[in-house]
Length: 99
Image 1 (cartoon, rainbow, N blue to C red):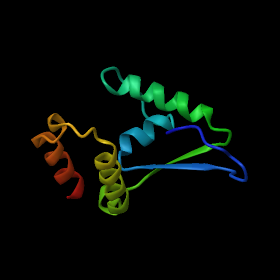
Image 2 (image 1 turned 90 degrees about the horizontal axis):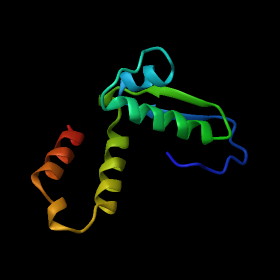
Image 3 (image 1 turned 135 degrees about the horizontal axis):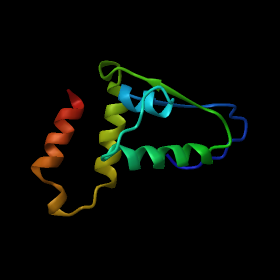
Image 4 (image 1 turned 90 degrees about the vertical axis):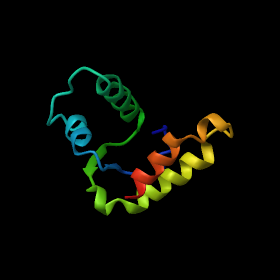
């Protein structure tokens, strides 16, 4: 999530298929330690950079096919062209994203 130009935008909506993440950024669930704590802190910091209120919405994974397709496209467009990145991990991630 990068800062954006807010000309004429009254509110930003962030949608995610992670119900836990949405509840955490809304303050409805506690953020525990581990890997999610630094990510939550970064997300909260970035949201504060936006010059408008942010709404957080959960989208069930089954209704998120368009976002999954865009994510896969962005990943493949931006992944370094190095054989180390064309691994079974990449193929598994893409297969999991499409199901």
